[in-house]
Amino acid sequence: MFTTVLPIYKGFEIQALVYPNRSADGSKPRHSEGYDVAVKLIRAGAEPTQANSRVFKLSPATVFSAFGEAKRAAEAHGRGIIDGQVPNETIADL
Image (cartoon, rainbow, N blue to C red; front, side, top):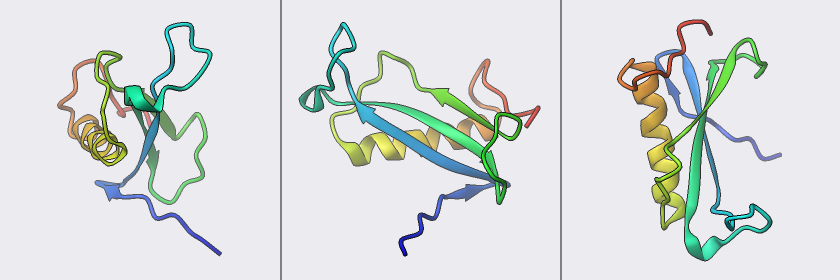
């Protein structure tokens, strides 16, 4: 059985959400156009629910050309949110 281990940082699991950029009308993915990124923060060891997890999307203007680059950016963004360094994004109520 395959098990995914999420990075844990200061009591939160950081789940990188990387997906292909979509066409302007949103109808089909465009892998050649790069990747969009979001990050899901979950209390470590908890089952993800709306009460103990939250998804934060990186700026829509930020598109990454490589999957690995996008994944690393998501994890760094998650650490920044946990550390309180990202304006208007908080985990205080998780």
